[in-house]
Structures are given as structure tokens and as C-alpha cells.
Amino acid sequence: MSSPDVPTLPGQPLPTLVEELRIGSLNDTCDAFGQVFSLAADDDGRIYVADFQANEIRVFSPEGECLHTFGRSGEGPGEFTMLAGILWRPPGLLWAIDAIQGRFTVFDSLGTVVATHRVVSARSASLPWRLWGDAGGNLHYWDPGPGNIIRYGPGLDLSPQDTFRVPRLEREMYEQTLESFGNIRARTPVPHSPRIVHTVDWDGHVWLAKTSAFDLHETTFSGDTLRSVRLRRPAPQLTATERDSLLEATGLSAQRLPEVKTVLGAFSVAPNGWIWAERAGQSITAWDVFDEQGFYVGVVRPPVPISAEPFPIFGHGTVTAVTEDAFGVQYVVRLRVIAHP
Image (cartoon, rainbow, N blue to C red; front, side):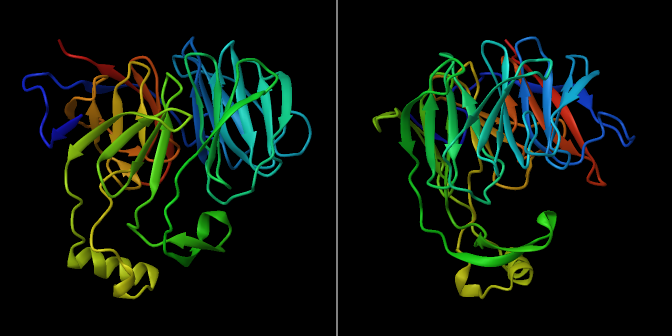
């Protein structure tokens, strides 16, 4: 499916995003977040928030009331050295990954440890780690070291079923100081250098795209392409002002910067099959949306800027995500997707 950069079906009304819940405060309470790293939501509307600084998971009712917390820093059962991602998964269990220990911990909704599993994983500074569930109850886990997506079957035994190797692009790197991780020096991709982004949909299929082109591909685990969804939108040129700003921020030479900007950020496929593709950037102010047939619906804007990380989660008619105020204080918001007839 290839669409021009205008809605494919003229007259089809755009859905509207309405903020219906906001969780967060400046008080020293359960809803005062340090650094939200991952989100999950269960079938009853409870919201689970993984706080990276506290190595703690906080549970909120559908109305935003803090119900309880579980997890803490440590290496024992139910503890984390680096809480890197969470996922709610049938039959009513929360899976959490510890990036340092290479361990899954499985909790029930009350925070009781049900199971733990060691996973063989190459450690990586690429955080947070992504987890997906599908309609068949399978768990999909991205191992950022080799770049594989591993599919595990339903149940608690964590039995691997298949592995999908995500294609990699050779990206030019430079050294950067990461202040949020204790001023450590790390190799970082040159800004706007293209990369492969991916997600897993409700049917358990892998979607791939290159950030320099609006070209999304639905793929089976065996590597067969089922369909492609394209938006004919050229990548915008880097302006002289943008180039000067990047040169000052990175210390790179002008020759190392690409000529064009990335056109696509991360993207997600909602349970109804609609594709929500982020505009590239640290903050999401618009999604390019496609329906379940791959037709381009148009641009849908959230009522508040949404953080690109942690990754927003798309449910049945909802988007749960993080926003920040002018002072950098994080809030968890639930947006209702209003589909206009």
C-alpha cells in the first residue's frame, strides 16, 4: 500500500485524542516519579509504572489512585539492579526485565513473585528494552546485544519458540557524555543517521522501517514480507541553523552530518491494527496514522507533548504515555481515542 502525503480516503474523520487521566505530583508520595522507564496496563485498566531511579513498580487504579508498590534495588527475589522494562501478559501477570542481572521476574497484580527466569543476553547500553505481547499470549523480547527479537510461548516456563534477527545498519558513531547516567562517556550515533526501528503487532508479526524513509514492512518470523505500507513523504533537509546547532552540541565536523533529517521515529501497532508512527524527536507532538488496511488516515496530535521514551502503549481505544511539564516533572497520562463516525 503506497499513499501520497494526504489522507487516502478524503472525508474520513480523524480520531481525536482526549486526556482522561493524569497521574503525578511533586509531593514525596507514590505518584511522584523519579524517572519513568516503562509502562503497562492490564485488562481491568490498572496502570503499572516502572520507575528507573527507585527500581520500583507502582500500581494505579483506572481512576489514578495509588494502590501499592513492589520491587526495590537489590539482587534478591522481586528486586532489581536495573529495571529496564515491564509488560502485562495473560493470564494476569506482570513480566519485568532486569538489564544487569539478565533476569525476568513475574509478578501477580498484588506484587507477589510468581516466577523468575534467567535469560542469556548480551548487556547493552541501549535502554529501555522493549517487550511485546500478542493475542496468542506469546511474549516477544528484544535482546539489544545481538539485536534479536525472541518469541516465547504462553505460560510461565519461558520456552523460546522462534528468533527474528532485526537488520542492522552501520551507523557512524561519536563519543558523548551521558549526564543522566552519571556523566559516563558513551559512543553515540551521529544525529539523524538512519537506523532500523521495529515493533511487534497483536498478530505476532514483526514490523520494520528505516528512519530515513516512510516505508513500513510487516514480516513473519521466518522473514516473509506480508505487506508494505508506504507514505510518499521525502526526508526534510537539514537547515543551516540546525546544522550549526548540531555542530556546536556534538563537536563534529560538518562533513560527518547527513544532508537530511530522519523522517520517522518509533511506531506502534494498536490492537485494532491501526499503525501510529511518531515524528522523529524526543517529544511526540504528532502521529501519522494508518488504518488496519494500511490506508493513510492523517495526522493525529495529542493534547499534550508525549515523551518518545518510555514508549507509549496502545490499548483498546487508549494511549498510555508520559508527558513532562516545563520543569521536567513527569506525569503519566491516559488518552482516550475518540473515533468520529
